Image 1: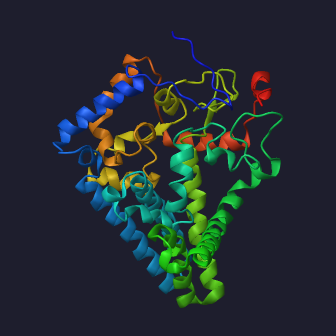
Image 2: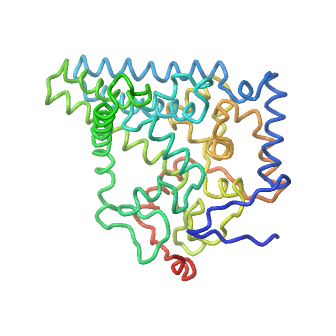
Image 3: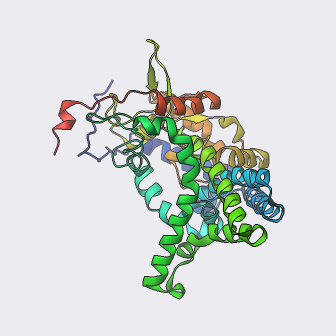
Length: 373
């Protein structure tokens, strides 16, 4: 086996070679997509299928319908269901956020119906998390490190209060995120003027229209309560779904807990981009992603399409609906290059996220890494 170059907080360079795993897989996937789709361009070959477009339309429409019913009736149950349906809206926006504006159109703004922002996540999620998942410069790790320690570190452990209170924190994070987006919108409008703001910047305000809709039919107090329930349910469900594909623990041979995915500071660092993406990512329920309308709809509605996550991390700009076309080629490449890969049970993965946060002991990083300036 080849000797791995250790990755440290000061080495962010992956090794690239035209004959290595990732370069080879990219060529094979491109050829297969071009052949199977009969497309005239790579943009067309990697873009969404008709069934995916239809599934996205249903996913966004069902949220808008249930939200309107919740506002008109004042139903807490319907506002909770609307929060659940926002999981799919984030999935729609996330899928198209990674694609070109020409290819994705307005679909990426579905994220902006949630407390998150397509404008911000194109910078943080795409340029930080996707390049360096589970490393010190992955913003989706270090943004929470002071509260929930994902990455091994010096003298670090999970905050005892947060370990027990994180469900309540997730619930409140929804409303906090919305008002945070409103603050960004107001700041942009002050400095640039509404007419000079891009559509992505204006989209920060979309959740406030939902709040105003609740207030319109239910008054300020009850409207704010219903809106908080909607966004709170979303965050309580979505955060475990989203983070468990990178941060989940399982029992080891000694009865302890070990992370399913690699995190910086652990042994076994990969020195190439493709192998790192695989090591730092977990999949589940990939059989749903079979290219059909139903498969696209269920993957979006239930999991934000994060169930088929390894392929997405390897090729983020390829539409999720196209992953099934090259899956066998990808799996054969894993086997050819001796790269470990497995799928997980979704329930055990979600329970593993709970274990990762509440029961995991944070391992200190090595002295060599501590001494790096």
